[in-house]
Amino acid sequence: MTNKEKMIGILGGGQLGMMLATAAKNLGFKTNIYSPDYLSPALNYSTDQTIAEFDDKKNLTKFAESVDYITIEFENIPSDTINFIAKSNKLFPPSDAIKISQDRLKEKNFCRENKIATNKYINVLKTGDLSDWNYGKKSVMKTRQLGYDGKGQKIISSKREAEEAFNKFGQVPCIMEEFIDFKLEASTISVRDTYGNTYTYPPAENFHKNHILDTSNVPASINMKTENALKDISTKMITNLDYIGVLAVEFFVLKDNTILVNEIAPRVHNSGHWTLDGSEVSQFEQHIRAISQLKILTPKLIYKTKMLNLIGDDINIWKNKNNSNNEKIYIYGKADIKKGRKMGHVNFLEDLE
Ligand code: AMP
Image (tube, rainbow, N blue to C red; front, side, top):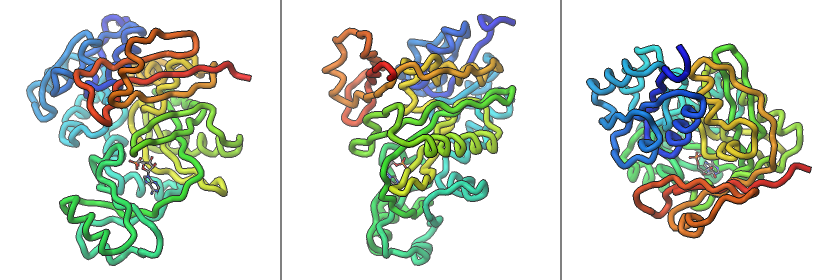
């Protein structure tokens, strides 16, 4: 069977699905995007579309039967759906890794079990659990599930504030963790294939605005020892998760170069968009290769790259500009401009010294 006859199913229809579908097409695959929203940007880029809710077992069955491999483009797909789809044995990354990354407590426990440093934390299931925390230092309360771009997070300076935040979050399962006065934030994009090959791209240095990723710079302003340490941790995580596909790991690097894992994402990641132009092979192509049992490639860094997210109205400045040699513009084609919504990104390229 050639790639042309094979179909990749993607759960989710956002911009990550759009860029995965494009990479799949370039490798000769057909794609079926599964999304509950008929306005999803990825739908225009796929061969087939399934518009249905994630708990629609009839459509999930039909979708799973119609494709050769299945992957996800966002991690907050209900765990019942993940379990149902996993039965097809076509799902990559593995469901266990997806479930760990859906829950901040499981992520931190995984780090602890694998001797990977993370900040101090406790599980908060009831108000009484808040008595087990030391409020001497600034902390952060986070909902264990469904938080993103700063949603479901609150900085805490006292037990009273912790109780208020826990009530505001509706007493859903949370964690309390230390606030980290980091020197910089970095992330890695790692990929592992079914042949056991693993590759980690050079780490990106990330800057956030209003809790949303604003820019990612590669190479990061870190020394070789820190770069190697970040890559070693990512390799350990992707191997110990017995993972297939792209895994993103977000880190805090402290002033003394101590490294702490903040969180992981079991998918292609916004801080890896620079790979579309700054590397010989993008994170999207690598992910499609890995999940479809092709070998991943060992790419070279070909440009210093700064990725700038176009959030909300920012898109208006860029949408009528043409790509130039050193500015590559990506417009996601979302129906409405909304405050805080990721509408596109630009990769700024600079020759390597
Ligand atoms: P997260 O959803 O955990 O990735 O958090 C989003 C952003 O909030 C991070 O990239 C950091 O900039 C900031 N942040 C999250 N947790 C902490 C923490 N414990 N200490 C300091 N900043 C944090």
